[in-house]
Length: 251
Picture 1: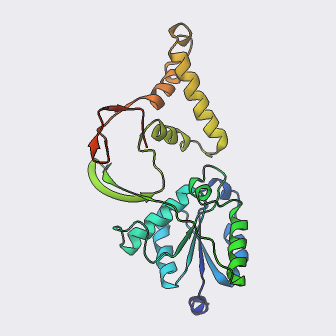
Picture 2: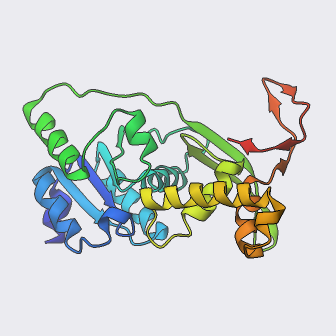
Picture 3: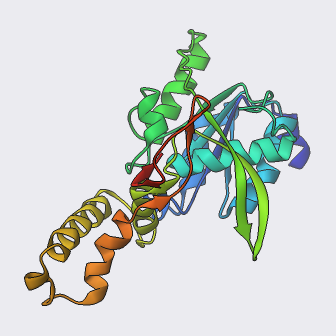
Protein backbone atom coordinates (compact mmCIF):
# COMPACT_ATOMS: atom_id res chain seq x y z
CA UNK A 1 0.00 0.00 0.00
CA UNK A 2 2.77 2.47 0.96
CA UNK A 3 4.69 1.72 -2.24
CA UNK A 4 1.58 2.20 -4.35
CA UNK A 5 0.90 5.57 -2.73
CA UNK A 6 4.46 6.75 -3.28
CA UNK A 7 4.24 5.72 -6.94
CA UNK A 8 1.36 8.14 -7.44
CA UNK A 9 2.28 11.60 -8.66
CA UNK A 10 -0.39 13.92 -7.25
CA UNK A 11 -0.51 17.47 -8.58
CA UNK A 12 -2.84 18.80 -5.87
CA UNK A 13 -1.96 18.80 -2.18
CA UNK A 14 -4.61 19.79 0.34
CA UNK A 15 -3.90 20.70 3.96
CA UNK A 16 -7.14 20.72 5.90
CA UNK A 17 -7.42 22.39 9.27
CA UNK A 18 -9.91 20.52 11.51
CA UNK A 19 -9.96 23.47 13.93
CA UNK A 20 -11.29 26.04 11.47
CA UNK A 21 -14.88 27.11 12.06
CA UNK A 22 -16.34 25.37 9.01
CA UNK A 23 -14.54 22.06 9.61
CA UNK A 24 -15.21 21.48 13.31
CA UNK A 25 -18.35 19.44 12.70
CA UNK A 26 -17.10 17.68 9.57
CA UNK A 27 -15.62 14.47 10.94
CA UNK A 28 -15.31 12.96 7.45
CA UNK A 29 -13.57 16.01 5.95
CA UNK A 30 -10.51 14.15 4.63
CA UNK A 31 -12.62 11.52 2.84
CA UNK A 32 -14.85 14.26 1.41
CA UNK A 33 -11.91 16.13 -0.11
CA UNK A 34 -10.19 12.94 -1.30
CA UNK A 35 -13.32 12.05 -3.25
CA UNK A 36 -13.05 15.39 -5.06
CA UNK A 37 -9.35 15.36 -5.99
CA UNK A 38 -9.23 11.60 -6.72
CA UNK A 39 -5.97 10.32 -8.14
CA UNK A 40 -4.84 13.89 -8.84
CA UNK A 41 -4.44 14.80 -5.21
CA UNK A 42 -3.41 14.00 -1.68
CA UNK A 43 -5.25 15.31 1.39
CA UNK A 44 -3.63 15.65 4.81
CA UNK A 45 -5.25 16.80 8.06
CA UNK A 46 -3.14 18.88 10.44
CA UNK A 47 -4.61 19.07 13.96
CA UNK A 48 -1.81 21.42 15.06
CA UNK A 49 0.75 23.69 13.42
CA UNK A 50 3.50 21.20 14.34
CA UNK A 51 1.89 18.68 11.99
CA UNK A 52 2.30 20.95 8.95
CA UNK A 53 6.07 20.51 8.51
CA UNK A 54 5.98 16.75 7.69
CA UNK A 55 3.15 17.40 5.21
CA UNK A 56 5.26 20.06 3.47
CA UNK A 57 8.09 17.52 3.21
CA UNK A 58 5.71 15.04 1.58
CA UNK A 59 4.38 17.62 -0.88
CA UNK A 60 7.92 18.52 -1.96
CA UNK A 61 9.00 14.88 -2.24
CA UNK A 62 5.99 13.99 -4.35
CA UNK A 63 6.24 17.05 -6.59
CA UNK A 64 2.88 18.60 -5.75
CA UNK A 65 2.15 21.69 -7.87
CA UNK A 66 -0.95 23.13 -6.19
CA UNK A 67 -0.84 23.64 -2.43
CA UNK A 68 -4.37 24.18 -1.11
CA UNK A 69 -5.18 25.38 2.41
CA UNK A 70 -8.61 24.23 3.51
CA UNK A 71 -9.40 26.90 6.08
CA UNK A 72 -9.26 30.66 6.39
CA UNK A 73 -6.45 33.22 6.37
CA UNK A 74 -4.82 31.53 9.37
CA UNK A 75 -4.56 28.18 7.57
CA UNK A 76 -2.88 29.82 4.57
CA UNK A 77 -0.54 31.81 6.82
CA UNK A 78 0.71 28.70 8.63
CA UNK A 79 1.02 26.67 5.42
CA UNK A 80 3.22 29.28 3.74
CA UNK A 81 5.35 30.11 6.77
CA UNK A 82 5.88 26.47 7.74
CA UNK A 83 6.89 25.83 4.13
CA UNK A 84 9.53 28.55 4.36
CA UNK A 85 10.87 27.12 7.61
CA UNK A 86 10.80 23.50 6.44
CA UNK A 87 12.46 24.29 3.11
CA UNK A 88 15.00 26.65 4.68
CA UNK A 89 14.02 29.50 2.36
CA UNK A 90 13.30 32.22 4.89
CA UNK A 91 15.08 34.87 2.82
CA UNK A 92 12.45 34.62 0.10
CA UNK A 93 8.91 35.95 0.15
CA UNK A 94 7.43 32.63 -0.99
CA UNK A 95 9.19 29.25 -1.21
CA UNK A 96 10.69 28.73 -4.68
CA UNK A 97 9.48 25.11 -4.74
CA UNK A 98 5.87 26.18 -4.25
CA UNK A 99 4.39 26.75 -7.71
CA UNK A 100 0.82 27.67 -6.80
CA UNK A 101 -0.81 28.41 -3.44
CA UNK A 102 -4.58 28.28 -3.38
CA UNK A 103 -6.47 29.88 -0.47
CA UNK A 104 -10.09 28.93 0.21
CA UNK A 105 -12.98 30.46 2.11
CA UNK A 106 -13.93 29.58 5.67
CA UNK A 107 -16.76 32.13 5.81
CA UNK A 108 -15.14 34.46 8.36
CA UNK A 109 -12.74 37.13 7.08
CA UNK A 110 -10.96 35.30 4.21
CA UNK A 111 -9.00 38.38 3.20
CA UNK A 112 -6.58 36.64 0.85
CA UNK A 113 -9.19 34.56 -0.99
CA UNK A 114 -11.34 37.63 -1.53
CA UNK A 115 -8.32 39.65 -2.67
CA UNK A 116 -7.56 36.93 -5.23
CA UNK A 117 -11.15 36.91 -6.45
CA UNK A 118 -11.83 33.40 -5.13
CA UNK A 119 -15.42 32.75 -4.12
CA UNK A 120 -17.38 29.75 -2.92
CA UNK A 121 -16.80 26.75 -0.67
CA UNK A 122 -13.49 24.91 -0.64
CA UNK A 123 -15.21 21.89 -2.17
CA UNK A 124 -16.45 23.91 -5.16
CA UNK A 125 -13.04 25.56 -5.61
CA UNK A 126 -11.31 22.16 -5.65
CA UNK A 127 -13.85 20.74 -8.10
CA UNK A 128 -13.17 23.64 -10.45
CA UNK A 129 -9.40 23.20 -10.12
CA UNK A 130 -9.69 19.48 -10.92
CA UNK A 131 -11.96 20.19 -13.89
CA UNK A 132 -9.62 22.83 -15.33
CA UNK A 133 -6.58 20.60 -14.88
CA UNK A 134 -8.25 17.57 -16.53
CA UNK A 135 -9.43 19.64 -19.49
CA UNK A 136 -6.01 21.19 -20.03
CA UNK A 137 -7.50 24.68 -19.97
CA UNK A 138 -5.24 27.57 -18.97
CA UNK A 139 -5.27 28.52 -15.31
CA UNK A 140 -6.08 32.04 -14.23
CA UNK A 141 -3.38 33.32 -11.89
CA UNK A 142 -3.60 36.13 -9.36
CA UNK A 143 -0.45 37.83 -8.11
CA UNK A 144 -1.04 39.14 -4.60
CA UNK A 145 1.58 41.41 -3.00
CA UNK A 146 2.92 39.94 0.22
CA UNK A 147 4.81 41.40 3.16
CA UNK A 148 7.87 40.16 5.00
CA UNK A 149 7.81 40.93 8.73
CA UNK A 150 11.00 40.83 10.76
CA UNK A 151 11.58 41.82 14.35
CA UNK A 152 11.92 40.58 17.90
CA UNK A 153 9.29 38.93 20.06
CA UNK A 154 9.24 37.76 23.64
CA UNK A 155 9.20 34.03 24.27
CA UNK A 156 9.61 32.52 27.72
CA UNK A 157 11.00 35.80 29.02
CA UNK A 158 13.58 36.17 26.22
CA UNK A 159 13.61 38.29 23.08
CA UNK A 160 14.00 36.17 19.94
CA UNK A 161 14.14 37.25 16.28
CA UNK A 162 11.32 36.28 13.94
CA UNK A 163 10.58 36.47 10.22
CA UNK A 164 7.12 35.80 8.82
CA UNK A 165 5.28 36.54 5.61
CA UNK A 166 1.73 37.83 5.40
CA UNK A 167 -0.67 39.79 3.26
CA UNK A 168 -1.95 42.28 5.83
CA UNK A 169 -1.18 42.89 9.47
CA UNK A 170 -2.66 44.61 12.48
CA UNK A 171 0.61 45.13 14.34
CA UNK A 172 -0.62 47.26 17.22
CA UNK A 173 -3.47 49.48 18.32
CA UNK A 174 -7.17 49.06 17.57
CA UNK A 175 -6.82 46.37 14.90
CA UNK A 176 -4.46 44.23 16.95
CA UNK A 177 -6.61 44.42 20.07
CA UNK A 178 -9.75 43.72 18.05
CA UNK A 179 -8.26 40.45 16.81
CA UNK A 180 -7.11 39.57 20.34
CA UNK A 181 -10.71 39.70 21.51
CA UNK A 182 -12.09 38.15 18.31
CA UNK A 183 -9.95 35.01 18.58
CA UNK A 184 -10.74 34.55 22.27
CA UNK A 185 -14.26 33.52 21.24
CA UNK A 186 -14.93 29.78 21.18
CA UNK A 187 -16.14 29.97 17.58
CA UNK A 188 -15.01 33.20 15.84
CA UNK A 189 -17.24 34.45 13.05
CA UNK A 190 -19.42 37.32 11.83
CA UNK A 191 -21.48 37.28 15.04
CA UNK A 192 -18.33 37.77 17.14
CA UNK A 193 -17.17 40.64 14.89
CA UNK A 194 -20.45 42.49 15.52
CA UNK A 195 -20.24 41.70 19.23
CA UNK A 196 -16.68 43.05 19.65
CA UNK A 197 -17.35 46.22 17.63
CA UNK A 198 -20.66 46.91 19.39
CA UNK A 199 -19.30 46.28 22.88
CA UNK A 200 -16.27 48.50 22.20
CA UNK A 201 -18.40 51.36 20.87
CA UNK A 202 -20.97 51.21 23.69
CA UNK A 203 -18.28 50.88 26.34
CA UNK A 204 -16.47 53.93 24.98
CA UNK A 205 -19.62 56.08 24.79
CA UNK A 206 -20.71 55.16 28.32
CA UNK A 207 -17.20 55.69 29.67
CA UNK A 208 -17.27 59.27 28.31
CA UNK A 209 -20.42 59.97 30.33
CA UNK A 210 -19.48 59.69 34.04
CA UNK A 211 -23.07 60.06 35.26
CA UNK A 212 -24.15 57.05 33.21
CA UNK A 213 -20.88 55.16 33.58
CA UNK A 214 -21.17 54.80 37.35
CA UNK A 215 -24.05 52.37 36.83
CA UNK A 216 -21.83 49.94 34.84
CA UNK A 217 -19.19 47.47 36.13
CA UNK A 218 -15.59 48.70 35.92
CA UNK A 219 -14.53 45.67 33.81
CA UNK A 220 -17.24 46.48 31.25
CA UNK A 221 -16.01 50.07 30.90
CA UNK A 222 -12.41 48.81 30.65
CA UNK A 223 -13.34 46.79 27.52
CA UNK A 224 -13.50 49.89 25.31
CA UNK A 225 -10.47 51.49 26.97
CA UNK A 226 -8.42 48.39 26.25
CA UNK A 227 -9.33 48.26 22.55
CA UNK A 228 -8.91 51.99 21.94
CA UNK A 229 -5.80 52.63 24.03
CA UNK A 230 -3.00 54.24 22.01
CA UNK A 231 0.33 52.51 21.47
CA UNK A 232 3.64 54.36 22.10
CA UNK A 233 5.95 53.75 19.16
CA UNK A 234 8.43 55.25 16.74
CA UNK A 235 7.57 54.81 13.07
CA UNK A 236 9.31 55.50 9.76
CA UNK A 237 7.77 55.84 6.31
CA UNK A 238 9.98 55.92 3.20
CA UNK A 239 13.01 56.47 5.41
CA UNK A 240 11.54 59.45 7.28
CA UNK A 241 10.58 59.23 10.95
CA UNK A 242 7.03 60.36 11.77
CA UNK A 243 6.57 63.04 14.41
CA UNK A 244 3.82 61.15 16.26
CA UNK A 245 4.79 59.06 19.29
CA UNK A 246 1.37 57.58 20.15
CA UNK A 247 -0.69 55.67 17.60
CA UNK A 248 -4.27 54.43 17.60
CA UNK A 249 -3.51 52.08 14.72
CA UNK A 250 -0.31 50.50 13.42
CA UNK A 251 -1.23 48.28 10.50
